[in-house]
Length: 387
Ligand code: NIG
Ligand code: FE
Image (cartoon, rainbow, N blue to C red; front, side, top):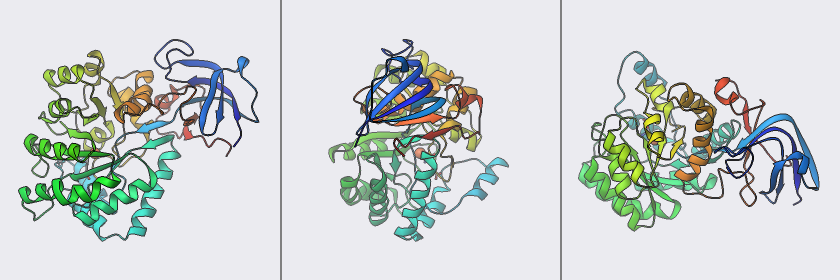
């Protein structure tokens, strides 16, 4: 390996407030970066750049930290476009469609699932995502959940056991929860970093607060970190439970009470907002401004899944966050990078500074504002340094 100087960066977003303009994005104009052994060796104004073995010129483009998509469900087969079309005609989402994907995923061969997953990972990377979290949850048997996690672990260290997605059709809830917290957890924990639960008493398919607590405590005892799907369809116990148990993140947060916002502000659980879901289920958007005003750490993620948000595009999510969550372009970019890193409790990503991973995303644009200013235009891609 040798060092590479990446020059010609019109705007470098570092997320390092000590660098550049002193803002949270730590913006450096006319910048350069030196990459060595997959890490950042140096970042700063090009006038002061050190020598390196090789040189690439980006010709006046912007560079931002690679997007951290901290919530996806990428291991699945099948199609639910008809469900989407019905929803656009007025049918409400309640989680019942998950069973369709479970059936298609169980029926798919391991090679088919691996190929589908590889295609989705390529799609993410082509749009600037360099870290992705992947959940199981479309298997719901010991063997099928274990298979999903094994496949996910082939492409990311951020793997999440979501056996408690819904109680599968035809199974008694209590028996299923015993399985999830018993044999299924034991089989899945070796390939998982996290455990998650769909805590949503408003859905007849998902789990209530007591059930979710049981699942999360079992996961914690097995050595897994905690994540929660909470408050997606209605106000509920998910957010408070996540904060109480010290979960790394509670995701969706579509329906929050003042007490939920206060709880989040008092703890260190990240609120991960998934506006692709509100877009694709035609639901009200979460109140990002209240969370930010209270000092809550906010992340943005795609929730890429075939039911509620079949997008792999972090730029699309950023555009929604700016337009509909009323986040500034700077806040949205921070949440899609450093926010995602916080939601995964990672300190090696989300910031472009010496010693961090050289996960760089280049924009075919002179500034990060173009991510929201040019919605639907493929401006972002992960940079292959030396490639
Ligand atoms: O994050 N809400 C629960 N799980 C997914 C949707 C799963 C599906 O409908 O297939 C979500 O929105
Ligand atoms: Fe999800």
